[in-house]
Image (cartoon, rainbow over all chains, first blue to last red):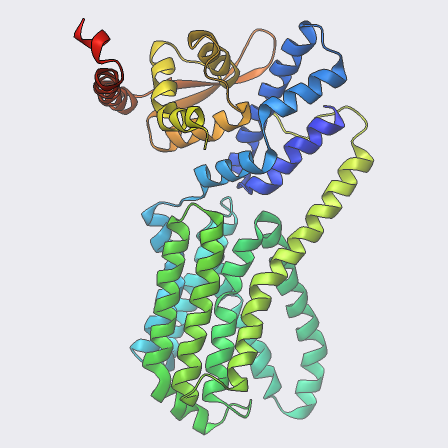
Length: 317
Length: 113
């Protein structure tokens, strides 16, 4: 396929952000349409260059087509919405019912999270899997924190090995998710500023002490409530079609939940403790977006360099 | 605002269902058929046809199947479903009622004849 057409289809593909199973069919169909159109135009006497120009202008703007394709495929079913909100709901339940102190309940929730994430990840990465994926990173963070409390010698031995490995894994997951859609990375990382906010609320000094444990008991209903609010946000997110509404929802809900945390922890909102989690929230929203832009630019550059062989980029259905 | 575009947006689902009621078709064929049957009146950005077809498919009003055609290419053929036929019958009645009412207002003499 000609470079202009390849670029045209690639622009639609990257803006439509479909899962692999839908992507192949949709792009093959558009490619088939373009081939028919070009054949008709060249048979009518147009040169190849004129035919391509006419074809692309009659096909329409890539952004508009991609947006409409996105909206046709983005809305999840109610079942998917419930499934996506389930990890936040379970996490909220652990605190609302004070089950967080029982290793049995913690283990059940942990196994459920890891098993569901693995199932979704290896079955086409549907939208609902990304909220589970965020929680599956929690054990990695918890083990890292526990290593900090080991006796000094052990801690020095474990940290240089564990932290680079954990960081590599975390970045790898974020990159893989961002390649699918940056908004799913933000969705996955959404609990991070909330967890940081509650951690600062229960351990203002940054160290986990016996006082922190008492404060968890005190804040537990509110911790539960904040994760229940997150569960509601995610179910609405899955049901929404429009992308701008989804972005707005994540930003607004993150900010509202952080305000709730800081207000209950400090009694006011104009504190530095509020600024920190808010900055993390903006990072959670903007970092995946910037990362995706970077991937997209490098993909376009490689297409421009490499697509001179006249081959199709679209796999056949 | 372009009235023709707005009118087309409001009626595109009915038009697509109506075309598919007569025979199963693939995207490019639908564009050509619509152009011929409307005597060139309905011209739109062709790439936007597919999101419209996929929305109808997601709603269960049409279904699709890939087929290999004699020239060796793959085509995705769309078919109207039973749910789609019911919906079309309903929309056809609504459109005809609307059309009659609009004609009565815009061309009173003609409608009396």
